[in-house]
Length: 267
Image (cartoon, rainbow, N blue to C red; front, side, top):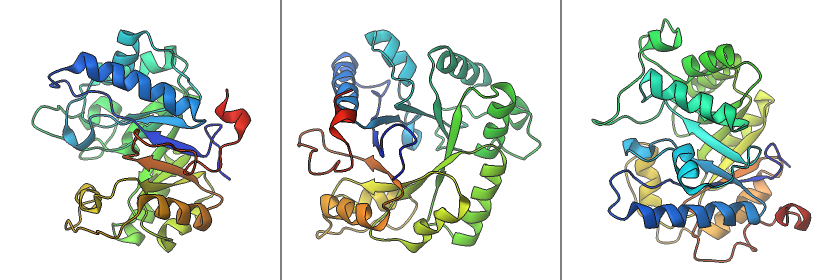
C-alpha cells in the first residue's frame, strides 16, 4: 500500500479564484476543508491555476488565514504558466515553510497567464515543460523537494510512457494518473517504473467533465457511481495510492477512505 505522504490518500482542494465575488467566505471554506482532509488522515493536494483559471496560491491563502501548513501531508502543484520571479518566490516560500512535496506539470494556459520562457529555467527546448521544470528544481533546490508528475493514460500509451521515463530521468519520484474508470491496464503498467504511483479517482457523477479535462469528447454516464468506482480501484490497485478529485465535502468519508488507520486519522 502506497504511503508516500504518510497516507494512501490525496484529496484535491482548490484555492479561491481571484475573481470570486465573496473570496473571503471562500477562504474560510478552504480552511475548513483543509483541516477536514488532514483530520481524516489524508493528504491535501492543491492545484496551480487549474484549467487556466487564475486562483490564489496555496501559500498566499495559508498566510492570509494564518493556517498551519503540514509540510509532509500537503502537495502543491507547480506549472509552467508563471513569470520567473513569481515561480522563484513560490519555490522559496515553499522551501522556507518546510514543504516537502511538489507535483510538477506543464499545465493549462490562458489569456491572463504568462508562460515561462525555456531560458528562464535553463532549458534548450522550444517551450518550458514539466521536464525542464523538474531539472530546474533539482538543480536549484537539491534535496529540498520530492517532485512528482502526472500521467495521462488517455494519450497514446507508448508516447506517454516515453514522456514518463524522461520525467523520471529529470528527477520525478512519484506519479499520479488521470482519473481511472475501472481497472485500467495502462495505469496498472505504472508499476513497471519502480516509483510510487497514485491512481486518480473521479468522485463526481459528471463524467462529461472528466472527459473534457483529459481532452476527450464529453459524454454523460448516468450509471457512473463514484463510490463504487473507488471501491473497485481499492481492489485493482492495492499497492497504489489514490488521488480523489471532486470529492464531496457534504458527505461522510468513512466508507470511502477505508485504508486509513485510526491512529493516522487522529494525528
